[in-house]
Every structure is written in structure tokens, then in C-alpha cells.
Amino acid sequence: MKITKSRLKEIIREELSIVRESDLPSWDGAPFEEYDLDAENAQGMAAAEQEYIVKIGAGTLSARDLDAAVLTAKNWQEMGLDLLDGTSPEVLDALNAESEM
Image (tube, rainbow, N blue to C red; front, side, top):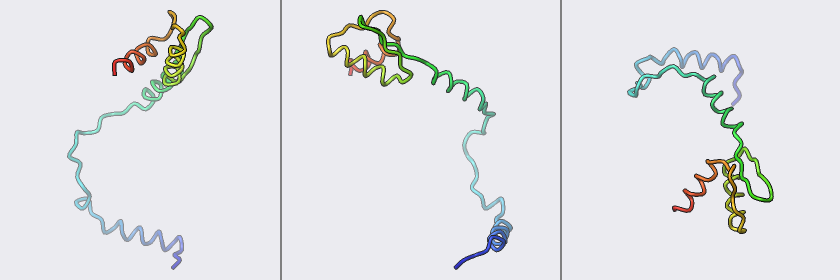
């Protein structure tokens, strides 16, 4: 069965006229607070621009993905390469957390 666009609009209007506010579920949670989307976006952009450094004697890796930097550092350590000063603290923290597990 096909319905025309105008008939669909009519059906929707009819259904909406039947619904009363008391029929809608109530919200029992905490009241919503003002949300600053611009601040959230700025924070996300800053995180996306973060670069993680992994430094060894042969060179330096710079990556925007922490997981990639940690995996590279882990692989280099398994190859016997030492991480040098200048390696991002986030990378070192993640490596230490993995070794403690």
C-alpha cells in the first residue's frame, strides 16, 4: 500500500493531536545543565593535535595516535633498543602500565 506525502502528513498530525503531555515518560534524572559545545570541540581538537614522541638513538617517531606510539615503542624495546629522553611521558606511562599487568 502506497501513501502520498500529503496523506502521511495528515496521519502524523492526527497521531500528534492524540498524544498528551501526560502520556510522555517523565525524566527522573538530574536536570540538564548548559552544555558548551565549542569548549568540547576545542578540547577534542587540542587532543587531536597532540603528538606523541618516541625517541631512540637511530631517530624519532612522532605520532598523533597514542596507541601507535606505544606499540612502536614496545616493538623497539623488544628489539633491544633503548628509549631516550624526549620520549613523551604518556608513552612511558602506558608502557609502565602494560608491564605492571
